Length: 293
Image (cartoon, rainbow, N blue to C red; front, side):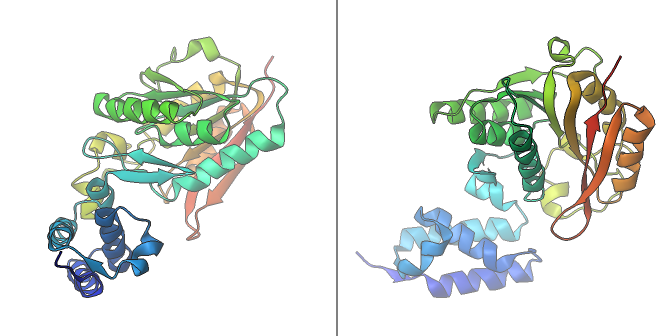
């Protein structure tokens, strides 16, 4: 069978993506090659030659990436924690920054050493990313996830079924509005950890084409100040958490202090802390529920 060299094609792809303004042309060029060949990216060096058919498929994917179609839409997957999630049109693509929120939640569960079955709630779950990553890492936990959008729920249900088939503890998915005063009322005062990656982008923000043209706007925008969902959601979080339960909410990098102020204004939280991402930008606010009368 005729084969052709892979490396020149990857270098050409990198140049194409760089010219198109793709933020990470080298990584994306290799990631697409690894996807076509069905291998992990570090193993590309072990595959110097490919078939003409593989090369043609690769070039087509590179062309679409140059049009700023998200890499995850082309590969069909996005990572969160130790799991891969199916993603595509109609659902928000999980970002690497949210890995920090996942790690924070797992650290809180580990530190608490619950004698009871820990209960975790993921508000605005989207593809199910946080809920499923936590359930994978903590099979002893009871994990609930809430999502309003019908298309996102389709992806979340698909991912939940895949994870359960792989042996993870199944999560409970709920269709609903996280600002609804009655959402998950059966869990009032029982939840140990609440995490949320809600729509938080201010409507005036300038976004990369991958985000602006492909992520669902319902999952992106949080009103003029980016707090339209976070503001009423804090009441839901306070209602769900048990005394001494903890929460963390991801926010726009312009809203760290404002999000912290909302928790402080509620009056039912202590240990309110702003957490940066790896680039040093404000990324999420954590807080602890105080005892209630």
